[in-house]
Image (cartoon, rainbow, N blue to C red; front, side, top):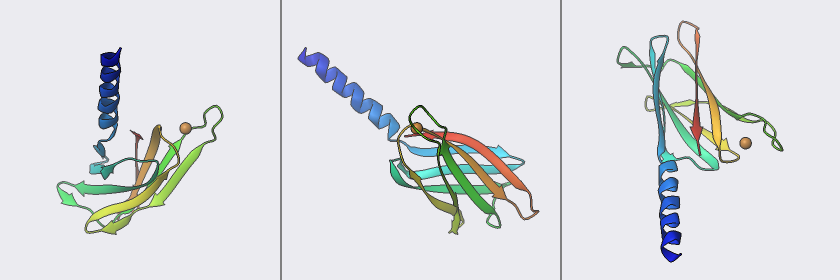
Length: 127
Ligand SMILES: [Cu+2]
């Protein structure tokens, strides 16, 4: 019984470690390369997200970036969201997002390029 307990504890720790990875998601849209990351693992509360944009290998800074994280309505729980504009800091766009609970959060990342076009990327993160 004792060893089963130990095994269970190890599995629990392993699962927590898997969840403790920082975010790193990369993709492309309309010829732009997008990287969404965090330096720390996600927590309930405040999280800093970093968005990096480039085109043909050059970093883009003359862009407006907005990101919205949301969780659909569930039984006993209303729809939740946090939407923020990102600020340019040393060539990277940064913003703080507050997660009010654990689980899967969907996001919609929008960026407006110099030509006035708005590009949208969707994805999700877990915490
Ligand atoms: Cu929820």
